Image (tube, rainbow, N blue to C red; front, side, top):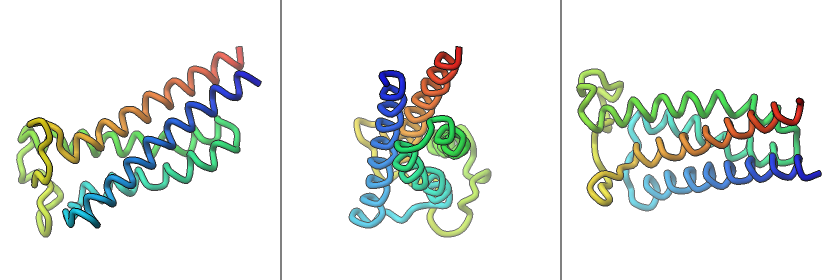
Length: 144
């Protein structure tokens, strides 16, 4: 019973992070009227389904939740890294997929001089990824 509860807690915390991330992105675009760029949309495509996957995963086997969520987290994390590299001007703007419309290097928020929307996305995907790695290790230990 205790082993099952710990897996559910990990999934629940991942659900909280995904939900806050989804609501935060909607707040920035719908309330603050910051139009999302192409890379922001790709990150949303990876993050939004995680809310439902983790919610449903709370009632399913943790292995299934891990299998469905990890590819989305990995893809979102890679896109977030690329987006941050654009923001930091390590990758030139020419290499951006945002050639028309909203620029991927536009800085809408700059909290404390370094916290941007792409950084928030990177932190969210990283935190969820760490939780999924912990979940995978926990599931391995339970099989031993």
